[in-house]
Image 1: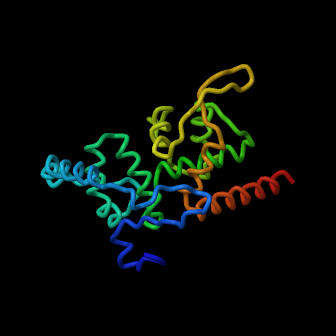
Image 2: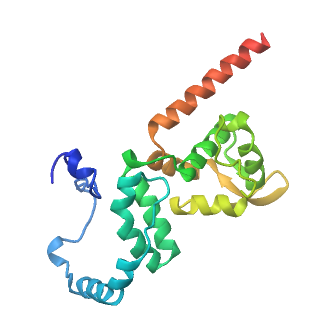
Image 3: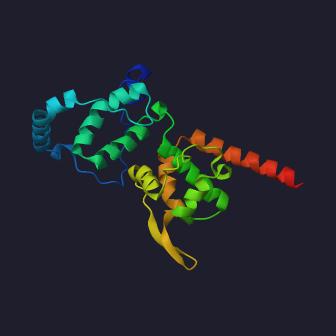
Length: 218
């Protein structure tokens, strides 16, 4: 439909926003689509796994409120049957599609914390072990609780960031070569999955604390 979906419907639906194609973009005409194969595969899946889906325990998507979690639950069950990678992709998509339904997402908070550290340190890349040390320092995370768990390590960070397409890379800093993250790689995920209000609030807090430090030095 054109325009905004009524709130009473949107709150109980999965709303996929679409945009008009640019004249410079090339897409195959809809008339060329032959859905026969896709329909046959969907029917086969329903016949093979219908009872399993019906009996499956509820899956609550981390970071979604109760209503959004209920809406996405059948898709989470299907994604889990398809494999861990698909469940991670669905989780990231659910958080992106339903920004108003998000509770505090640990992965989104991690993105914001890492962005804060890169900004405060004025660096474009950083080894993972150094990031972990700084993430556990409230001076850099503004009191964020995302990495106060002692079990957090390089693997956990990679696991949290993987659904957003962010992976560690190997690079050199000075004479040392190791794995870490690049600030630029966070930009798209930060814009898509972290509410702008949260980013603005964090930047305002950085400015406020900077002024306090200036006053102390005077």
